[in-house]
Length: 239
Image (cartoon, rainbow, N blue to C red; front, side):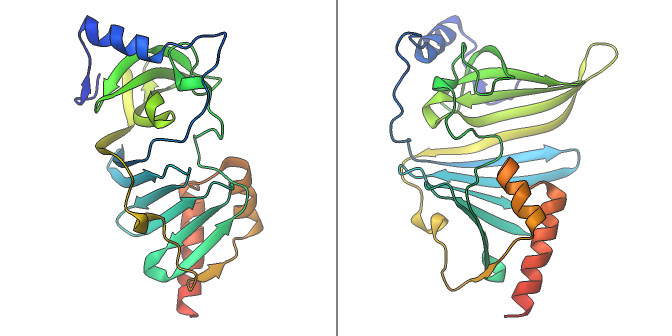
């Protein structure tokens, strides 16, 4: 199964993609300021659907907005390694020192190209084009689950598509989770996406949450996010 928005099925497109991703092993590329961009993404797990906004400034500041039917949280990742979870509807913010974003390495391997996957456990699986961006395709197998990622070197290895599938006894795969990108805009995002109101009540996370974020980064697993949201709602009522 291939996502409908993937292009580059022709030989010429794949040759061009491979050339764009090739890296001289004797001279690793130098990191430069990141290309600013704005993404809108959707993740579907069974009947549950989450929508995300992901935006990145050239100075390295990133914002990830997660929405579902019940809540919205805006996680702002600052260049100094700190992150702030902002609950705008509740006028509450949570500071997380020395953390990162789940699934994203602080210093990803060069270009996440076809010879150097973004994660040590990834197996390079070719190249493609998503929304005009050359991407490296890689697979990771954990037990009977196969996770396939499409990462864009031009966007600092950001995932533009991924899917998680369970291997079936007959050798086929059953789709469990799928994330697609519907909007990709290059250029400086709206500064309001990154704003943190200093008048919002600052909530101190529990030691359990702080340790979890320190070890794994944001966003939190769903059950822990629900705990944090409950704390934010309680703090909002006390304002």
